[in-house]
Image 1 (tube, rainbow, N blue to C red):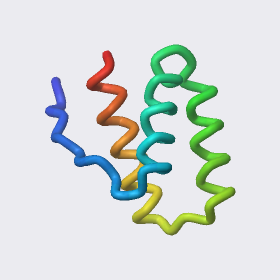
Image 2 (image 1 turned 45 degrees about the vertical axis):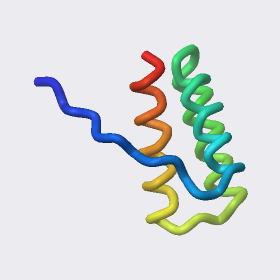
Image 3 (image 1 turned 90 degrees about the vertical axis):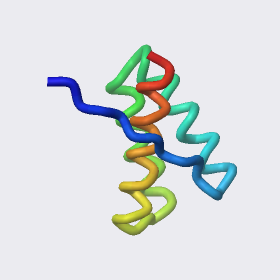
Length: 67
């Protein structure tokens, strides 16, 4: 079953948007490293749950676009 990928608009914070692009690129080569860096970012920035979801969805969308 193919799950459709819905467009996820860019995040308003340019630093977070750049981070999402970097993690999406890393995910193509090394998913484990991307996951570690994502978790470190979440801990370091003390993000609330909805912010984590928005970042995760944006990374997933960018990763699908690059593949």
